[in-house]
Amino acid sequence: MTQLELFELPNEEEKKEKIEEKIAHLANLPAGRHGMSEKEAFSFLKQEVFFALLNRDPHKYEIIDKVIDQAEQKGISYVLCKVSPEARRFIHLARQVSAERYRATAFLRLQPIDQYKVLMGEFEIRHHTAELIMLHFMKRFPQYTIILIFGEEAVIGKNGQIQREKIDRKKMTLPKQPDEFEKYWLAFYKSQFIAERLNLKYLKRMIPKKYWKWVTELKEFGLA
Amino acid sequence: MDTEQKLTILGNAAKYDICASTSAPQKRPKDQDYIGSNAPAGICHSYTPDGRCVSLLKVLMTNSCKNNCKYCVNRVSNDFERVSFEPEELARLFMELYRRNYLEGIFLTSGVQKSTAYTMGRMIETLEILRFKYKYRGYAHLKALPHAPTDLIERGAQLADRMSVNLETPNPDRLKVIAEEKNFMLDLLEPVNIIQKQIKNGLLKAGQTTQFVVGAAGETDAELLRTTAWLYKKKDMKRVYFSAFIPPSPFHSLTSLPVPLLREHRLYQADWLMRFYQFEINDLVLQKDQNLSLEMDPKLVFAIKNADRFPIEINLAPFKTLLKIPGVGPTAARRIYRARQDNKLTDINELKNMGVVVKRAKPFILINGKAQGSVKNIMTVKQLELFQSMTSSLASAQSPFLLT
Image 1 (cartoon, rainbow over the protein chains, first blue to last red):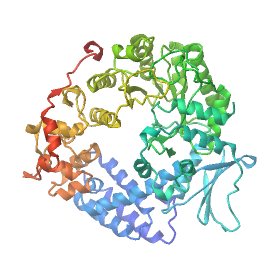
Image 2: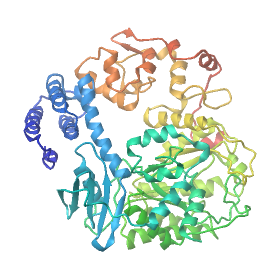
Image 3: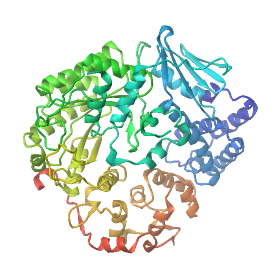
Image 4: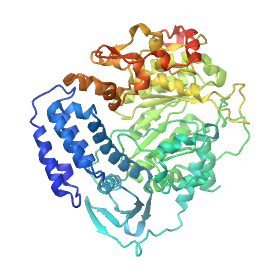
């Protein structure tokens, strides 16, 4: 579970370790017929457990525990293919985490502070996805220091290292400076709309309402 | 003219060009002295109220054009203001928007100003500024203009992740209707061939794409799908896009009416069946007018036309057969195929957990020999009546252009 070791789950370390121990046994399962190699299936399951553990659902340990038992009894495919309701819920937990990570990388806007070579942004997250999101931006902008604010916490990515710091929101707000490129972005965004294709239902599906406050360009069309 | 106005005019002129995908293999840079990265699954940074993804800075470099294509708002005979971006201006603008995480990549396209070589030269200059001056490693899509010279396509292929040529129509005869000065084989298909060679040489990791304007030239779905299948098979096309013709009023000079968006949707469904569901072109069922049904999706039409092949035993059917069942997508089919190797599937709820749309699938499946439903439960009387009129299927062809 090297990937998971990178991440801290505050107040959950003991439970997390138990899951790590339990899943390690699955690596020794006799070869079954998963439609993929044993190694692939095991590493795929580990990946899903990793994402599910980052979910804040209070029942996640119970669900993960159950599906690891099912994997042992009926094979890893039984879980990965979502045959049982528990397996379906387990994969759903993992998907919620990867979806939140995806949406943050898509809708989080960065503000350059050029004199310090910093890119700074703010977003709201529900699950333990801060590091996953930071890894994306650090890879994309390796020359910059990235500062991401998630609620009461700032996550800082610099020279390949990630650190977390508690912040006082009353004292610290993102410096909002007039930005000519925001104006250009809005002009471009508006130009892409085709009135004959209006489909608000689809828009709402692609950008769930809880993210509208970050996607400020929606205001150009009286949304958000 | 200021940047904001240019963006409005040139963005508006490029909005009918479809290609939102930014999916491309990740590059592994050796140093840290770069900016940008590719996301293998692509990222959409915003959506317009029409539900379309905005992930690429998609503007024309210029709306000046020497061509006079009847379907195009930028054609030379239209009298309106012409504007252009300078390569450095466009490159810098893109980099600033990219740093703010508004965009995932750039889509370079243009009207043909002076000559194809001149205009493509400016597009390539923009890409060179991005790649070498700004050290940009993210996604770039370069449009090859009609009759693009070989050397410029080769240079573009070294710089871009994806290239495309808009074929616009499925064959030469239809092209004459909307763009009589363009030669289908020389101006459009030849660049496709040159791009294909670059892909075979290991360049353009995100492949090549093309686009058809649906309905502008009076073509049928049969013509479009035959050419589409041919492009996938013979030209290694990554993706074919369909754009329902919306007359760019008041400038257009065609008599064609706007095309229902549902027609475009059905074409995409048929396209997906060929790309992901292992359907052959002959499997697609057409109406007598050689178009797909607007009433029913092509997979359901296939299942009803081939009623003798159903219901299918879910625990025994080969993977390819599972893909033919309405309500079963490639992911669900893969899950069924894998899961049943260790444990027999016994219950419709298991299929539901696995992502099968059971309401659609029920009439077409057996679980351990037991039927699950009837076709009459999922079709309206109108759909059943319409189905009676559908009998023809698409004939396969080596080259679709011989059959027009």
